[in-house]
Image 1 (tube, one colour):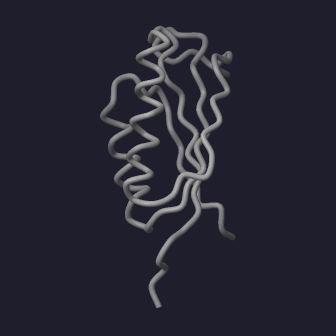
Image 2 (cartoon, rainbow, N blue to C red; image 1 turned 60 degrees about the vertical axis):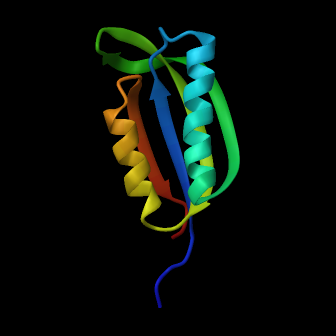
Length: 98
């Protein structure tokens, strides 16, 4: 039997040079995308933090952790959208189930 919904976490790092409004708009956009295909449990904005290594000559990034449940095809689509967005420096989506 096919899995109907899964629980996922996505951690993404936004460019720290974005303004507050641009950052809030991106966080809201990714949340809306997840709500359109499932249920968002939590969005935890960690804020600006120092990176372990420089990315594109930047020493820090704006971290956001989002927990959601959605159909199994959605994480691949969310990953694709995050990869083509130039304001997303890094992202990682993981399944919370065994």
